[in-house]
Length: 236
Picture 1 (tube, rainbow, N blue to C red):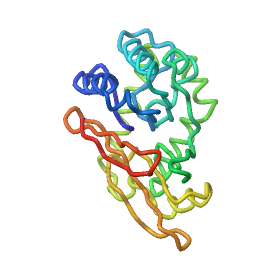
Picture 2 (cartoon, helix red, strand yellow; picture 1 turned 45 degrees about the horizontal axis):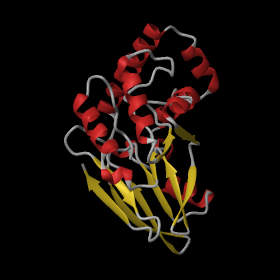
Picture 3 (spheres, rainbow, N blue to C red; picture 1 turned 60 degrees about the vertical axis):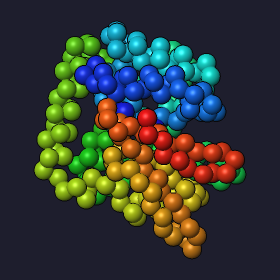
Picture 4 (spheres, rainbow, N blue to C red; picture 1 turned 180 degrees about the vertical axis):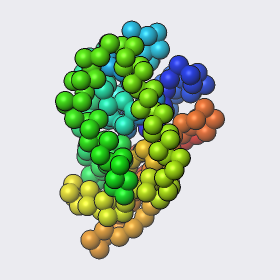
């Protein structure tokens, strides 16, 4: 799953997430991989809000029956070891390969593949830098809340004037990333364009699966059978 964009302003999505965490679907799963943007904004692990505490407790409870893994997105890159430890969730690197039915599968948030959007990639490099993150965490919590709101507003304004094509992944970047990790399967989120893309990579069949975002109405997760590798999109 990815791109839930949880916030106090989206109680319907919070309720859906809670139902999913309590569901037999998850309880029967070996692991849950959250590929970024679990939160619409994350101001730091020291966030004292009831909302942050609620999500932390929800995840911790779910971890009693399912292993939880988290990969940072462009909205929650400040989520750190303190929150992960409290939620009993394992943090993953930006590029993670897992084994599914004896086949390596690459997991990404996906924003690093949108290389046609040069302005976004510059901002991504800044936000992911240790210097920026240290500077952000040195701010007071009210200052961080304000800064996060400003960044979201600027992001929304930028998207409004950009071509939709440059906000999607670049196929050459996809293929280069898959070759880097020697995989024929890739799963990512970020673009909010769910679907499956089949293509040829170095003469072999390759597959890119894009996860859906959650919007309070249509919310889905991707279930993978680790024995067969079969993918199934489940609507919640």
